[in-house]
Figure 1: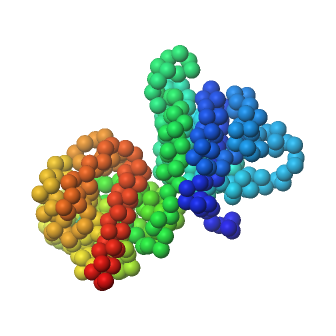
Figure 2: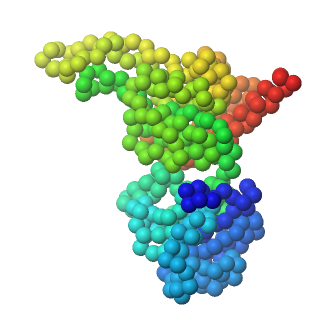
Figure 3: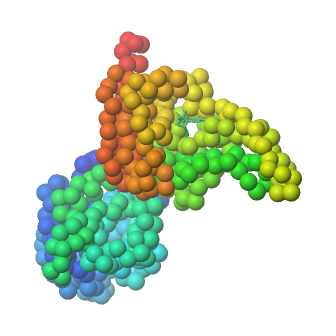
Length: 418
Ligand code: C5P
């Protein structure tokens, strides 16, 4: 593989895992993590920060992993070229940092490289899973939380920390997640490239409908759910087209992004791209109405209170049945209490195969939140609630459902042909 490609797991099951260990009391659990990874057939190499080597012996990890350990002594031995961090990064399918200290998390978020492990992380292109462990006061500090949010936004999977007794003798949030949960999170992140060769079109964010040069009608959609879906599609190997309304979110890696502002602009771009798509997910909160006219000059207060006449925007989703008849089409419904009957009606009206409902009346999920809780509606199947979890994880569950539907459509198409 060239330096440009992300190494794929050798056989779809076993992977090359680089376990980064930071200096914290939870470092002793790294030994168990190595064993768990190996039990499940993965190859493991460990990289210790200088302080981690004071909590857990490199020799322990070397013996358990069956590989030399990247530690300061190993690197100082000078047997290796200067590019050892590049070599290690190219070797691995996944980087798991457990335990991840506050210092490491902030370094990762800011792109700092104070030691070998963070330099390696900077050089690494694949999936990253971090398992924070620290005292709860440190974990809850605003600057750290900002940095952890930044990592999540860039697709880093953050597992834990969990609640329980802390090293200080107190009880609180800060314990590293148990090794088995970390292994599971890593295996999830190594999702097979099951959508290779497919094109997925996703819309995200709000639209803005201008009234005059400074004012517009908008809505509170943050775009986070749609961006998480796009990241997931790309991770699964799909050619991923993301049509984004005005949002301040970084483009997930491997995603082709088209920025739009209004519903009409979104309609045009979606129509241009829909024909090539195997799966279309309309996660955008498209404005249903726009001002009938646009004032080219800012409306002045002394002109009196304006009356703004609205006209309906086209329903983009409903128009796709004709433009992309073979694509699996998925709609979102931002509604608090959608009954199965109403969902069924909506699916028929919009001619979609799946409808994902989320409750936007709740502050802890939905609009603007990093968490979501949704219900998946499909014809002739009971509604499936997906409990509250980070949007990146919701995206993973939803793509599992989309793939099931894609597969069954494919086999249906084959059987009708045959
Ligand atoms: O009818 P409602 O707005 O509840 O439908 C929501 C679904 O329809 C979402 O998937 C949204 O992206 C899509 N939609 C659309 N065009 C519109 C309004 C909504 O494609 N004008």
